[in-house]
Image 1: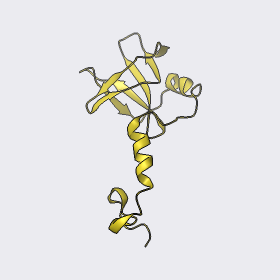
Image 2: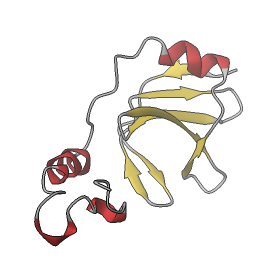
Image 3: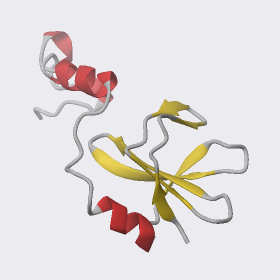
Image 4: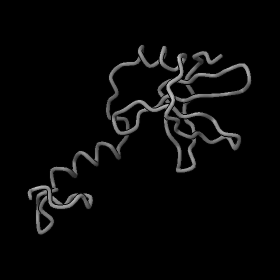
Length: 106
């Protein structure tokens, strides 16, 4: 059964490192990290190679921890930079074509 333990300072996915906001562990060596991604909480489970992979499942023990956490906030420089770039979306010839989303102005 998973139980909340001291939060790990960092953890790794195949794509890079992230900072957990909560960590759970079970008696069999299983480990779950709760992190913030795009202003949403995500669960990542430890894989055999030591990296973490996002899971779509919210199990009871993780839910119990999630309800104690504050509303997710911006958690990285890339999130803040992304929001800053939104203001530039309507400048120049690519009006409304920010991030390849197409012409949002019809």
